[in-house]
Every structure is written in structure tokens, then in C-alpha cells.
Image (cartoon, rainbow, N blue to C red; front, side, top):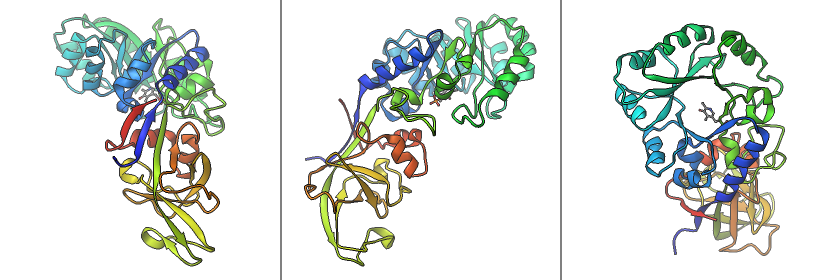
Length: 356
Ligand SMILES: *Cc1c(COP(=O)(O)O)cnc(C)c1O
């Protein structure tokens, strides 16, 4: 028998979550964001589940080409643009839309011979200060782009830093965007998952949902369930050994957990080399046999340990859910001081993936 750990990917949940986005943004088209191997769920599997999507957002060039090879006809947007002139040529040939966010991109568009014009997404920096031209240059840049035979269309694009934090909101960035682009009659794409759900006024022509497609909430104060989302991945393993502790006995590396009473613990075939966060502390929730219990001691490379003192039926072979349908990934992420995004993207190649 193989080592008992696997990631179950719920493709129907991905399709469902896409429909949740569409219900929330009924007047926009949506680029389903499938970067990072569809946030760890498998690109081909996710793309199949997202066949109804209006388009795809991705940033690994080879994977964008793969989407085309699999026969997907929808618009595909390269969220970080191209990384070389030869990629620009290939992007045009494969009809990939490109973000352009720095002056070198303009030079390439001006100086390269393309097999057909490309649809460009002019990325404007409205305060995130990561990618994008200063928003105030929008009019000049648009004028420059409109002269180029290589440019088929221009969509204005920006990205919010705090759409997931109600206290900070998006007002400042939205205002800067609006004043810098006023008078430009062009399609607009601004909203990630959080902005799509929290700010209908930011939806415009194209929304760009990622995390919600995979059933995790972008918000601190609203759960995935409250948003109507379904978990797209269940990471499951089994108990492979049990130990009986006396008061004073320690568990695992560093002997960081010490029992204060007799305890029974289960050793689970999942560790940080499977993608489980090593920094998850004692107390992080885990399901054993469908019952919520807690991680204890340090997570090691191939194993972690759980408290089964109050679960008398738990034994070797008992199913363990690290996150998924029965245990929101966001609960685990919060306990571990991270976000659902990081957990799902980190599931390691050695974990078998099964659809179900
Ligand atoms: C990743 C990404 C998104 C999706 O963000 P979520 O928070 O996962 O919805 C949207 N836009 C851009 C440019 C991205 O890189």
C-alpha cells in the first residue's frame, strides 16, 4: 500500500464557486485565475472544471500555452505580461492577452513584428506600488498605444492592496484610478476575489477571481461558508501509529509539547514535505474520524502528531483530514498564522491528487 496521504480535488466545487462569482458580478466577464497550478489544484483539472469561464488569468507562459493546446478558446490574460520579446511574438501567435506594466513592454510592442495585433491590459499603479505605470500617465500611454499597429485593443487594469480589509477599503485607489483615467472610454479590469465580492462598483468589464474559486475566503470577517463557497480540496491522511504518554512525556522534535496528564496521541502521515505548514502550532485544528481535535508538538518532515485522548475509537488507519470539506482551510491557516492561499499552493508534488 502507498503512504496514506492524498489531496482530493472537488472539481464540482470549483465550477460551483465560479457560478458564485458570476452571481455576484452579473454584468462582468470573469477571468478565472489559474496561476500557480490553479492554486495547487492542478491546472488541467481546474481548467476543465472552469470550462464555462469567460476567460483565464495566468502568469506562467508555458501553462498559458498549455491551455491553448487543450483547446480552450476563451481569452487568456498573462497577468504579469511577457518576460521577453520572443514571448511577445508567441503570445500574439497564440492569441494571449498581455498585461503591460513597464516601459520595456512598450518598446517591445513598438519594435517587434507580430503575426497579429495583441489585446493589451494597461496596468496602472494606483497605490499598490508593485506592478504598473503611475496611473497619472494613463492618457499619454493610451495615446502612445493607440498609434501602434501591434495593439488590437486596450483594457485599463489595476490591482487593489486592501480589498479584503473593510477598515482600509479601496476608496483611495479607486479614486486615483477614476481621476487618472477620466475621459478614457476603454474597458476596465480591477477586481480580484475580495474586490469582486465586497465592491460591486469595482467590478467593471472584467473581474479576476482566484482564491474564491478554490473555496477559501479572502476576508477575515466572512467565512467561505457565509460567502456560499465550497471547499475545492480536501487534504487527507491516516493515523499510522499511536503512542501512550504519561504526564511529563514529550512529543517530537524539540520536545516542545509535554503532556500534563496521561494522553493518547496519533501519528499522522503528513508533514511539511507534503506541504503542511511547519509553523502550525499546538492547537491547530485537525479532524480525526470526522471529529475535531488538535495538532500537538512540532510538525516534522513526514509526520505530525494529534491528540486522540478523547477519541477512543481512533486507531491506526483512522482517516485524518488536515483541511477540506469538514475543516475549513481558513481555520487551519488562521491557526498557523497564514492564509488559505499559501496552504493550497504549497501541497507538495509527492502528494497524490485524486478527483472526487
Ligand atoms: C492572483 C491575481 C488575482 C486573483 O487574486 P485573488 O485574491 O486570488 O482573487 C487577480 N489579479 C491579479 C493581477 C493576480 O495576480
